[in-house]
Image (cartoon, rainbow, N blue to C red; front, side, top):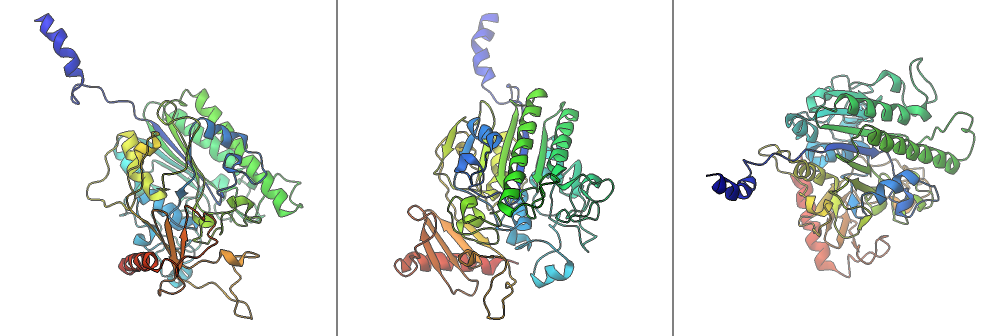
Length: 453
């Protein structure tokens, strides 16, 4: 009998019900407000040293064709949380006052009935927390936005634009102002505070896997560097702010190592939309567009992913087209977490690409940005919010399918077609030259737009 058991044991160990589940990784997602595709030195850089972002890239994988779900903060964040295009949830711009939201034809907050990546992980036994900018409801005169718990968070410390602002980040004071409440940390010290809270939560939650959304806001204008340096020009202040953000990312990585959590923590770092300003396209690595724009500079941002022993170190993935809406199914696959039943994701499960394999996108990406026309000057020229960069103003609907990207207005006018495999900077409009491709993509994008709430 013993001999038979010895022979059968290797087979038994291969059975799913006999094996012990592999440890689930902690998930740490750093979303950096207005971080341009070219901001980190490892992506080409805008002349600012970022040794800790570069270190993260050396220890993980860089994805150079990563797209957010929108060129503006609220809608972009909706895509990460839900795994769906934000227009499905009536969020196509930044959430603001009730009157402003009505004018933009959008909701006042993310519907708590929407799919939630955080809720899925909580139901799988994860401790969950949010630190930093939320901007998916709350603030200004929107006083009935759901609390963080409604989306699956155990802990939620937000900024001014959230249902539960943290006192050190300001309860009523806007983060971009110079005013400060007595208990509020200085603007230049916000990232340090958020990193400390993240490490504290990780330490307290060591007995179980945890998920933290650490959503930083320091690279958003107006730049507030260390006191005494506020009288310099904008590029100098931008340099200081990005370097401080990089330094705090280094503190965070060192802290994970000191906690013994480095090897079993999946770290993701991305920007929520393109930069403003682009500083002559240096912050977009030459890509056309910026924040508020559906050109590449507004929706393509850095993505760095690290998980020692699972995600290849020092790898650059230039081929896989990854989107924010892929995060939900992909992270669930990597962490062996069940996706909610009945949810139809707009994103794809790309865990094979994260693990270093070759994986091509099989479905197109779609965008709608805003339903409110931008103001015009006395001559009827739309100048805001693209000061000095009029070629950043894009049509408000876009689709990417394979090498092709089409932009057009919601009424079907103004079509622009680009072959991104040959023209990453979107300089040559091929809509007339490739009218068949243009027509096919336009029909698909407008049908999608028509299907939205």
